[in-house]
Image 1 (cartoon, rainbow, N blue to C red):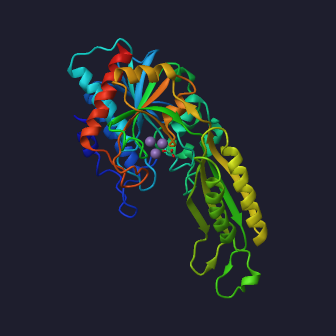
Image 2: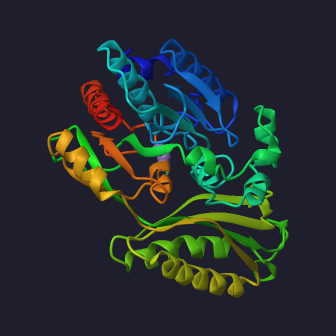
Length: 398
Ligand code: GLV
Ligand code: MN
Ligand code: MN
Ligand code: MN
């Protein structure tokens, strides 16, 4: 089936009627439905599917073995996300394997299609959790204890999905099988719109991280409490949101976002007792931690002015990544020198890049919008991406 047909086949899974778009989170009902669908599609191609100790799915063409050529992406989404971020890389990989099988190609190396777990960190807060665990870039104990908004731990959710909580953690044997990793992904900005090409090769991923700011005040009555008697954590939270924009603007090409803010208890006629907000900060080069320090200082000032307590927790951080130069050169040569694009989005390929030669292909997104329902790719561009990935898999595995 073509990549566009495969995407159409899952178009109804995990639609979010309230937010629009899709909400598919690690091990929830829609994501499990997609996993089951993936296994079934992979088995139709006579691939052998296994789930690794961290909940990543591996569909092998040929026996699992060293120097494998691995491709794939993820099936989870952000809350209210688009149809392409993640699934496009998975369906393109299935389409590429099918195209190679149909023309009678026999890979000389093992080939695997991988589906990484919890790429968006939409449920447990740490993005690329499956690939971080695989590579040992997150401590297993910390990962097991991560909680979703309902208080369910990653370990509990993994056990409910059939995994063994004790085995969650770095997986050097499996990582040792991966010779090269190539992830195809929808473009998440406006990079390809003006370049006249449906496909690009990834060059870099900018440093990025997430921090949780918890402001604690005094819960109280919205009508009976005089303004001068309040310790309202919403004030420093609001001040922090404004500081994030102001401070990010003072640095070249920085991006900093507060996309989630949760007052507790969350009543219209209640002064909140606590407000949690999450900062997503990304600055090219090494300046992300400096920017965050400035934001934390502004947040402390704002908290102090209202008499609130502030606790800041780093949830994740990844340095700048430059994708493997020889692999980039090879991709460019095989694909007729498409444009090269940096990205501000994080990816499992950027985690893998610290361990094995890794690269990315991007497919043009005519809206330039991502992590939102308007994310899009034309069918013709989806097919161009799948053809490019087919070419790459053939070249790498022969
Ligand atoms: C994931 O897509 C991210 O970059 O946040
Ligand atoms: Mn994403
Ligand atoms: Mn993605
Ligand atoms: Mn991502």
